[in-house]
Image (cartoon, rainbow, N blue to C red; front, side, top):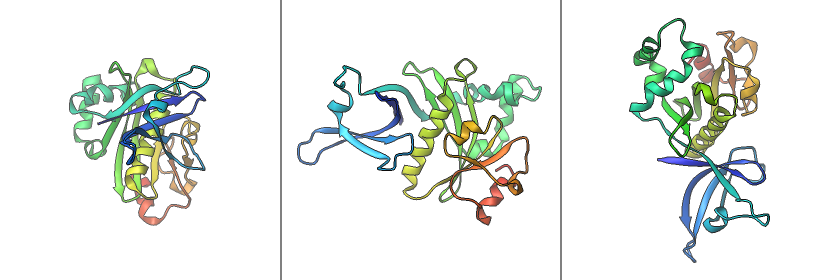
Length: 224
């Protein structure tokens, strides 16, 4: 299964979820979700012809920009290599990728990628379900020649919104930032209090209200 990311003519990004038929007219509608905070609603529907059409200025109303899907087994080595320059620790690439063969977070996670419509992989990340309402984000990495273009932030927002929708309830996300935390602040994360910082220079961050309850604290005291 895959999901298409779109950019509205006014600039905001959206995640296309599915299409559905109007119960009376049988007209197809697109169901889509905001990839930004919207006080009115996160989920919207629009007639498919209007969604795919143009506005009064002749601009495409929703421009497809990338596709999101779950990483397939044959793609794992490719996407893991995106983090080699940052996390290689002196190993050669083959040894670095092989490290993940017994990495419990990698083995139990679900990894998502963002790709072009020609199938070129842009970036990927791993998701770890700890308990109901609590997810970890790990191994956020972009293909070297696609960095600093906002792809990883877009994938992160899309994955978080998809998981929130699937959870059908409150969802908190945890991560350890090894880059400028401002990148993750823009996606709704905040640095945890100093007492939760056990792995500096990696910074523990989370969404939602602080302080963390004790059943959630244990996941940041062991780097997941």
